[in-house]
Image (cartoon, rainbow, N blue to C red):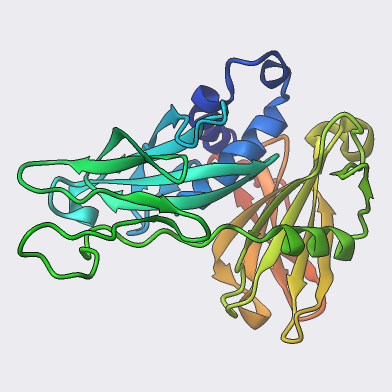
Length: 303
């Protein structure tokens, strides 16, 4: 798994470097931040690779841009893959940090991102580099970036090459409910656990494809989680809207495309070393299914 995290840390480095507090972040914290950024941008990881929406390996390029003028940068994650995107072969996602290891996509498009000097609702407008008329995308509260004015001769609907932004990754109410279901309570508005100097990380997304949100809550600290330094809790929202804890474990979760009961993805439970257990949901628990080697022969001594 070392290769994967080297890539992930490279993605996070540009956006996390700079402040003294950021410089003091551990490798595990930076890895969690990178994984949340990639997920918000619509990318996923498999072993030591980052994959785009076409399932093809990519090397995304992050750029830090303060779009809303609050002094904290948003991130523009760009990808180049002509076989996936057509046209110029470029695509981008605009993501905003919601909290520790929590990012939400607020804009997306195909082409090369071009920030403009004009602003709407306090956010910088953007366009896409290219010949001829290019739409201007403006920020609308609760919707993210949208284009309300077509180019001359173009229909009123946004062009298919510029997909609408995804909704924010979980409302504050969702995040609070997920923390409570996992057994955590806020202390002066902050959710703390093992390491009292930093807040728990949370990422909300639909893991099992049932159309309802799930959450991955991560904590860190070697005194609680040993050499791995990270633990995680999975919680899910049922059909009634109530949240409940599904699974809790020590390690770094790497969700796979293979699935167990109810559509839940297998988990490579990462940590130090080159051989990791793969866990599969059996309807009651995430149980051991097999081993996964990060290098040939790494799991040869495992039965």
